[in-house]
Image (cartoon, rainbow, N blue to C red; front, side, top):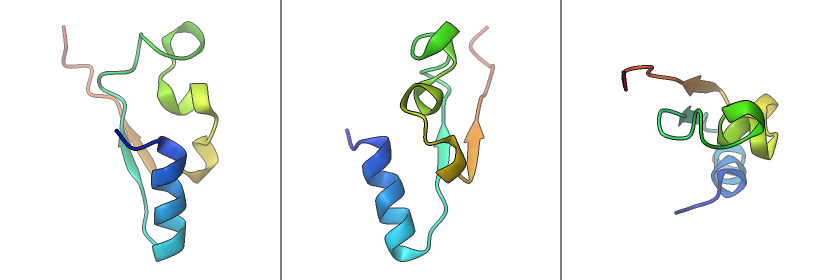
Length: 56
């Protein structure tokens, strides 16, 4: 699995935007289950984050 920071570096190198799907990390990673993006703290570099909330 590629690292989040590695993907962000590639996006910046090629002028792309990252859309990060947090569907399977919310509730498991980060402070109070805030997700990978919050745990690794690159929120200001991510174009959009998706939370599906469909795992009822």
